[in-house]
Image (cartoon, rainbow, N blue to C red; front, side):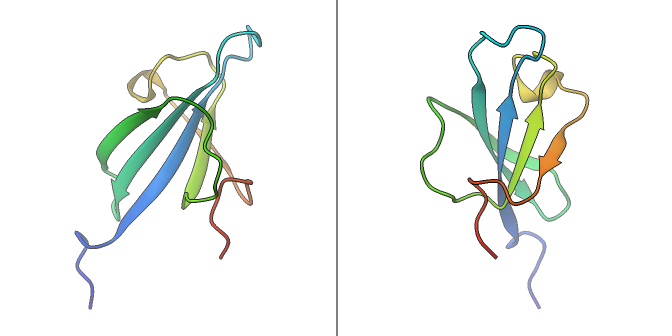
Length: 84
């Protein structure tokens, strides 16, 4: 039986601004444990090229970081999500 510490998932968070579409989109890679606690957060320079994420979330309220966001929308079958 696996422990909770061994199970990690990688999440891509896309931060957009629906009020100002010309603003730069931010991509953040997050490492979470099985309970959903954030272990590591890394800002990416550009949009990733390969599908290597377990989940893809998006916030379009124009926030600058994940810590300032109140809610996220999950995108199922996103192009950057790993195939099952």
